[in-house]
Length: 494
Image (tube, rainbow, N blue to C red; front, side):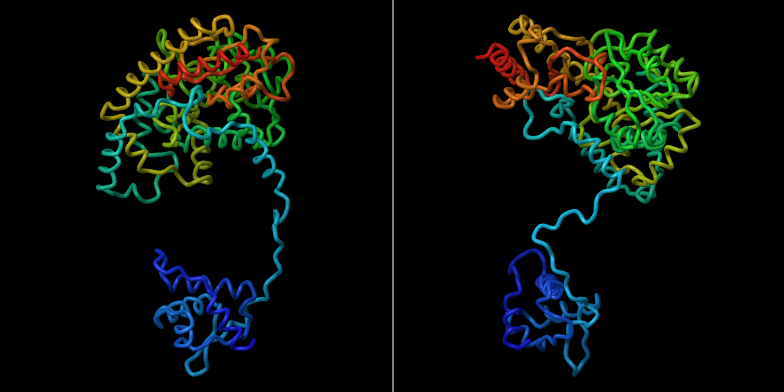
C-alpha cells in the first residue's frame, strides 16, 4: 500500500478529544478496528511513532502506549531498528453482511425458553391507573434502607466473598420466624433458599422437578409468569379451571391424574382473587401424596389481607413433604430489590441449593444483609402494617367509586386481599375486553383483560367471564378517580 494512502487511513482514525476515555485507548481501538476490517493488512509497516504523532496531533507517549497494547494482544509485531508491522498472524477479514442474522437456529430448549415468556406483560412507561402487580413504592422508607446498606458497606467482612448459595443465614433465620408467625409455615432455616425474586424460584423448580414431557397442572386463568418457566422446562402444561373455591382438583384428577407438579395460588388466586377452600386444599394434598406429585404454592401477596386473620398456608397442612412454598419481597418492599425465597421440604432443600449455585452462585449479599437488619430492627413489620392500611384505603376508594359510578357496568370479585381487584362486565356481550383495554391505552390508563391470564390451550371448562383486573395499591387517589372516569366513558361509549 502506498505510504500516502496509509497516511490518509491514519489521519482518519477517529479520536474524541476531551472524552473520558484516554486517547491511547481510543487509538488502540481505532487501529484494532482498522486491522480487523482490512484497512490495515497483514505485513503492512506502520509509520514511525514520531510520524504517527504528527499525523494525529497526539503525544508520542500516546502512540507508544497504543502500540504496546496492540503488540501485547498480537495485532502488531515490531523490533527496535526494524519498525512496526501489522502481524502476519492476523487473518484476512471475512466480508460481513449488511444485516447479520442469527448465526444458527436456537436449540430446541432455547426456542422454548424464548417462546415461553413472550406472552408475559411487562410494565412500560410511567405509573398510571390501573397498573397491576405494583406495590406502593413511595411508602417505602428508603432513608432507613440506605442507612442499613451503608452501614454494611462500611463494615465489610468475610461475607463479602462468595457466600452460601442458600442465602445469608441470619436472613433465613429471621424469615423462618416471620413465616411461622404470619403464615403458619413449618420450616427450619436450612429449608429456606434465597432467590433473585420468585421468578427465579419458579424457573429453578420447573427445571429441577420436571423432565421434558412431564405434565404439570396450571391454574387457568392463572399467572403467566409461572406457566412460562414450566414451558421453558419442556413440561406439558395442563390448564385446570378455577371456580369460587379455587383450583378444581376433581377436574385435574379426572383429566390429568399423572401430572408430576401443580402450581397454585391458594391464599389469593391470580387473577380472580378467590381463596382455595379447605376441602379443595385437603383434596389437592391427598392427590399429591398419592401420586408423589409436587405442589408449588406461590404466596405472592399474602401480607395484604384486609378482612379477618391471614389464611394459613397450604404448606402448613402438608404431611407428605410435597409442598414447596414460594414467596417474594417484590410486593412487600419494592420490585427492584429482586429478592424472593423458597421453603422446600427437607429432602429437597439441598438439591435446590445446588441448583441455585449452578444458576448464579448466590444472590447479591448486601441487599440480603440489609433486609436482615430491616427485619431485626422492626422496620419490616412497621412497613407492612403501614402499607396494608394504605392499600386498604385505596381499595375502599376503588370499590366505592365502582359502586357509585360503574355499578351498572362492573361486578366486583373478591376484594379481601391483594393489590388488584377483579371486575367482570355486567354487559358481557356488549363489551370486548381487548377493545376496552386498547381504548384505555389511548386514554392514558392501563386495563388488563382477564383473558390475558387464560391459557390459549385450555378447554372450555376453563373459560372465564370477560372482565378486567384493576390494580390500586400503587395508584394515588386522584389517579384512581381519573381512571374510573375514563373507564366509565369507555364502557358507555362516550
